[in-house]
Structures are given as C-alpha cells and as structure tokens.
Image 1 (cartoon, rainbow, N blue to C red):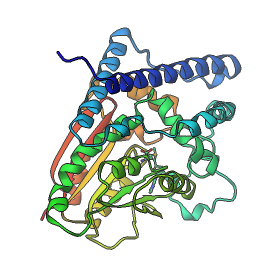
Image 2 (cartoon, rainbow, N blue to C red; image 1 turned 30 degrees about the horizontal axis):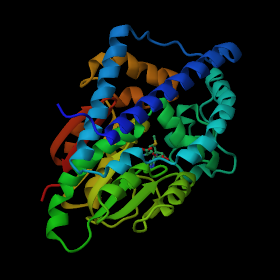
Image 3 (tube, rainbow, N blue to C red; image 1 turned 90 degrees about the vertical axis):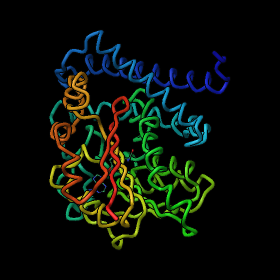
Length: 353
Ligand SMILES: C[S@@+](CC[C@H](N)C(=O)[O-])C[C@H]1O[C@@H](n2cnc3c(N)ncnc32)[C@H](O)[C@@H]1O
C-alpha cells in the first residue's frame, strides 16, 4: 500500500485537531454551565460507549469520502483547508462571552428574544425565535459573526465536510448543462446563511453563475464579506423568504439548500419545495442537505433526541420523522434519491423534462 501523501496527513491532522478542539470546548463549557447555571443543564439521553464508537466510525468515513472526492477532482484539495482561521480566532472569545446569556435563555425557557428594532411583520412567525438559544436568533450582526464558529464547534469540526456532500450530486446534475451549453448554468443556494456552501460551490464549479438567498440581512452581509474577499465572479445575494422567492419560474438549472429544513414547520417545508420546482428549469436538479432522520439512522436516535433537548430546535423532532421523499413527489419532483454521511442526509431530485 502506498504511503499517504503529506497533504493527506495534513488534512487528517487538521480534522483531528478540530475534533479535539470542539470536544474540549464542549467539555469545558458544560462544566462551567453545571457550576454557574446548573438549572440550565438539560436532561439528556445517555450515550453509551458503543454509540460513541459508532459516531467515531461514521466521522472517519466522512473524512475518507471527503478526501476521496477531492482526489477525484470533484473539488480542489485546497478547499479542505479553507476557513477564515484568523477571523475565527479573533471571534472565539465572543463565543465564550455570549455563553451566559445563552444559559439564561435556556434556564428560563426564553425562546423569542429578538432584537427590538426588528419589524416582526417582515418575517414568518416560526422564524422569530432563538434557534439554538442563540442571541438575537438570526437577526443581528453579532449572531452572524459567530455563527460559523459555533457550527464548527457543534459538529466537532465536520460542518464543512458535511456541507461538501452536496458537491458530487450537484456536479452530476449540472453535467449536461456545463458540457452542452455555452450559456452559464445558474445555481441558487437557498437559506445560504453566511455563504459557506456558496464558497464551496464557487471553488468546485467556477463556471456557474451563483446566487444566494436568505431571510437574514445580517447573515447575507456576512456572506457578502466572505465572498468578496475571494477571487471569482460576483455572487448575487437576495433577502427573501424561501417560501416565496422573488425569481421568475424556470430560471435556475440547479438549487441547493443546506441545513434549512429542520428549522421549518411542515407546511413551510412543503411551500419551499413547491417554490423549488417552480424555479427550476425542466431537467434541473435540487440538492437538499439536512440532518439524518430516524428511519435511516435508528442507532443515532438518542443523539438526535439530545440535539433538540439541548438546543432550541422547535421543528427538529417533527423533521426527523417527516417523509421528505413524499414531499418532493408531492411538489412534482422525480428521480429522487438520498444518501447519508455522518449526521447529514443529502437528497437529489429532478424537475421532470
Ligand atoms: C441552520 S442555518 C443554515 C445556513 C447555511 N445553509 C449553512 O449551511 O450554514 C439556517 C438558515 O436558514 C435561514 N432561514 C430560515 N428560515 C428561512 C426562510 N423561511 N427563508 C429563507 N431563509 C430562511 C436562516 O436565516 C439561516 O441563515
């Protein structure tokens, strides 16, 4: 067997480092919470050693696929190392400073502390919440500034690898447009947040015209900051509700949507899918990524249950049992398939010709 390359060793070391940092952060913050805000500590399902081993195996498999797909050229290897490390280092103290107010909200079960200046009429009611107990929900620059770092910590450094699982099916879906058409294929990332997925698509598919949409102006501002610091074409960002997107019908060849569905009530999930089919050109592809669901990963049920007990995730419990395939069919999608990677499930579906 050939010895692993230096780059592969560097990637493995980076992932291990991120995992250890995430675990150490959580261990310390849980200890502090138990001392300073014991009432905020949620009751959890115990996680036994066998399950921990299973989680490790699943994380190793994610790392293996992440490396393999880079080797196959689905995205450049440099993407595996890309992150605003300096920015994150600067913002890390903010994550700690934010913690006491997070505990306070958790302890008092306060889930609707949204900045006063926000005009509530501009947002659906389900959105006006402190998802993950985070300060200001999605509605402030402070929240947008520390979001990426919080997600990396939450998933022990695997968040970007999980998002990257959309790239191989997206490239397959776009193959016919990229090879046959002189016109640029248009791709919209729905609920793009701070734009991590847009950055990944931009480096894997520099030839497509990219668009991003989110309901949070602050998150889009952050996305714009990151995207404009990179080389590559301008990405058009739009503030709107994914249930009613301000684009003409059949205007995109592909749509992506990462980690949105578990934060939507059922009806909104269906509305978003109905909008997706409208926006796609016939033959176009939707790639949807979100948490795994109970039916495909029953062994991880206690982890999924703990997730919504620990963090304020009001629609997660319903999401993990929702039949997304049926919803896709109801909206008119065909050729529906799905695959799971660690804690992420990825659907691919087409708008019929
Ligand atoms: C968990 S974050 C995921 C963000 C990003 N896709 C990522 O991978 O980090 C959920 C995002 O969905 C956005 N969002 C929630 N409901 C929305 C809606 N109805 N329309 C548009 N965006 C929405 C939030 O503002 C937030 O940026």
